[in-house]
Image 1: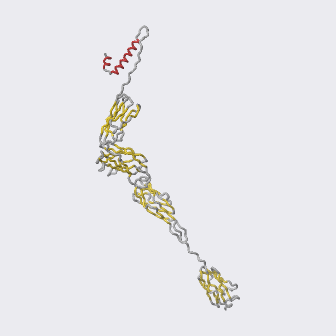
Image 2 (image 1 turned 90 degrees about the vertical axis):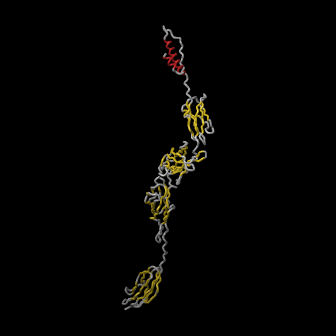
Length: 464
């Protein structure tokens, strides 16, 4: 009775399995009950389990909202592979291919086309035995067009191309259009999907990873974003979501690590400052300048700025830290040469300063030519009596000496004054009294300068 009740409450497949098992057990019992040692001749029937039940074909999810150009995956389970898929509207939703395997699972990827209005589409999955499962799709109207633009803002830096430099800003514009009509006051949410960037909150300039902006009268939602200063080179992705329809678009852009401050930082004066050595004294060689100064003013970038001189023995800087935009530092030079300074802002962007050059000045004027000394004596003959003095004038240039060349003139009898001097000058010849003269009554005095000019003086032999 218990077996009957159990079987009456059991499904057909379970009943068959139970009957087979029960009769197998009973047969085994009967075979073992033979008497007198006689062997049983009843054959043992092997138990063959029925095939496993077929799981019904199913899809997950069975209904979904889909958007143009945004892939949506639908998983397939049950049924008997292989599977095929068909679309009720191949223009709006092309029939998807079935991918996967029994080990990894099967799926179809829905990729809808643009729709001006919401449109229902059915995708039917069919297995190899003809079983089917339907996917009810609602293709949402496209409200965000493909004109999602990311434009770097000036200054853009150098070497970043169409990407955004680290530390730089960009303008993001998304246009909301439905059936060719621009949607105004439509809330669009911008999100950081991946990458080192943030959105700038209007008014407060707070940096956020998500922000909602309403479209303007042109159907454009505009937001400013900034790339983090420490961002390495990478591909970043932002997402823009129409919060009314739920349509999401993702846009990739390049971030380029930037350390070149050109185009961001500027220094005035922009041209080369040249110092020239002064003119030295007459006859001195050309000289390098020393102690020249020039003030440089820094604009742009993010203060404070650090100023470094690669050649401190040539260019010195004070102060080395400039704290304000538009602030200045003073450069002092020493000697000849050409060099620049390195200016780095708080965001580690660097720029070279304008060159400071120092060149040799002119040489000193040449000294006047040396005039060779000359000498002339007037007169070259004269007569001097006892106790008298005669004179001769010396002209020309240079110096002279006067020496008595006549031998035997007693000391004190004849005097020449001066015996040396600078030309021009006058020489006196005196015949002193009380001293006998030489036997000759003519005395020759040589006046020596550039040349030797003899002067002959006639004197008395005796002067009492």
